[in-house]
Image (cartoon, rainbow, N blue to C red; front, side, top):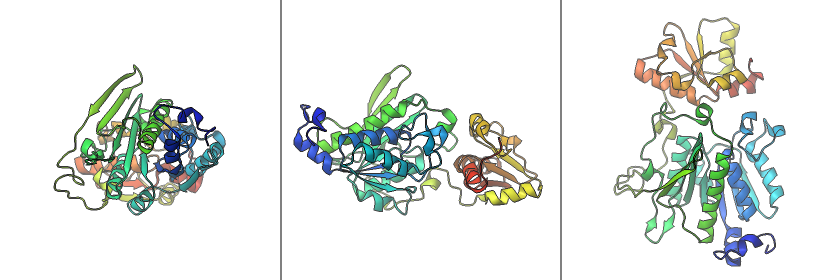
Length: 370
């Protein structure tokens, strides 16, 4: 072990005991995508004893410019399984546990309870709030990062201190933004090197916490714009009105986070891809609208009428009210956001969300129409 980790053991802040702590640590990484790829590589290289990987997604060609764990031949394969295969070859001393599934209410606390630290490498608000709350209830530190475009941010939540646990995600962000206000990476894009920077910083924060050296980013938010390398470190306090950790907490258990974040309309009507296929075959009268971005549409579509999600508020009149309207996106999330907004703001009653989006279509019928 001494030879393998010599370059970090000789650091003044490090010693053999520090490396022993790292080798005994158990770290859960939620999301093996862009942030997760670089974070996992450096946690593996540093010698973390047990690493859990939660990701139920499959590798796609559009992932490869930023998700550096994968190669072209991995497309269509499980991310978590591919990640374990690559990482095991980098360090055979580490025990990897994969969870080829989504992190949800039903499994979050059970999975998180088995680890010392959780690293949030996800890309959506429902899962971020879920991770935060589950970490709070299970008394686990949460190393969080998020990226978009050329900008990223990083913080450490719920860290144990002499004065109790530090602030959590809900102290910094009490409530989620409107579902149509914040663009996703599919809509706004992301430069490939950015998650490499932030994911590596997440790994560093984990090592600082485990090894007991340096100053972890508790109750501080680091933000950076990599176009000009302007950065800022913002301090934030605990919020006494925090619904899970404030003076009068109202949340005692995990909630429906998709509903909380406005991405789950329980009254929403849906169509399966099989039902949509039959509607097409039977030449039924309906409107099919695709709310993905133009570049996604060009890569493959099923002849939907393109109205990107960000343009829905300005183009809502293009949605027909005199016939069924099936709304689709990549996986069903953005289309659900569009439908929720259209129903609440303009009283639509004829909208159907395509379950699973174009990914479900590909799984059922093969490649989409180009």
